[in-house]
Image (tube, rainbow, N blue to C red):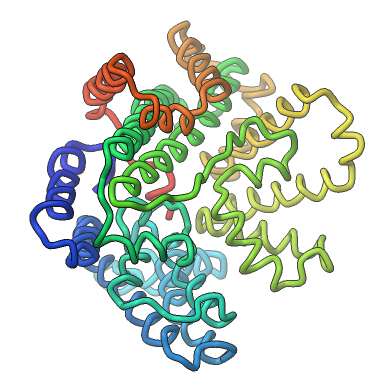
Length: 454
């Protein structure tokens, strides 16, 4: 189940809201949300929800014990379960292919290839690991009840594509579920976040994606102008796709009393690549910093640690060598910026933003194509393509221009906040109109990009 379909918007979500506020007593709210979250995830497969439940049981049984603090062997044991599941489902096939290993029975079943990746496994695994480490470090002195812990891991608004939460960020709203009251201001803010997020996804990201999808099959047949359009269109597509999900997640969380952190801080306005990683997928960057970069030694072994964390970041995004190279590409850019920051920072800000955006956009090609496809695409970009495919139309360039304007001008979070504090009838009509427009196009909407990858 995904946010941008009728089943979620008109059946699942209304039932959950009704059950949370009316059908069940306040003392059962944790269980209402937990049951809804497991049902939400079960729609992707019974095996997948079982993997989630086993991960929750395993980690809680170990990490919630009083002896967890300072015990390295308990920490290793707590991390082993979810990490093993993540490795098998997401990376086993990748390493097997890389080592030319294969185990296939007579019926064609492959131990490595014939498994379906559970949606969001990277996200909830990182939360399980974070909880175990925080218990080990003593950051969480008193473990929560099992129900609250399970809800923290599986809460449906952020289960499959983040944000990646620390338990400390949701401990207070979890404790306050029984007394939470939905005010008009909070409801309006939540609805605004949801509508703006769906608009970003359905009207911008999916419109761009539907335009360029037929062209991705034959990158060698693009002309230079067409390749440039694909490069820019995909850059805005992935931005609005993930940004849209993040906005919807924030809005859904607000409906039930949770204040999720912003996962996007206008990353395409970054002045350099290091700044970009403070703004893009913020919770992932913080997770990598706190649970990987600092334990590895941080700045004491800067060059080596940059290589390690960005290679890991690439693998987190997808199990394949293009993703690893994408991560190393960003690591090299960060290191290069560190060596040339005085020169870079002296340039006009608009030049810095344009260069950073261009470098990031070039890197996204490794998300679209395999290595051969990347070579063919860059050949077309620099005029070596056959140009058999038609050049982008005026309508397509107009859509791209609209995406650019929306990306760099309005601040959706500010708009959503104003909907709650300064809402007017005119504004309400505007959001209602936008929602109707979304419904007209939702049938041509696609999965969120980060959902199938993870």
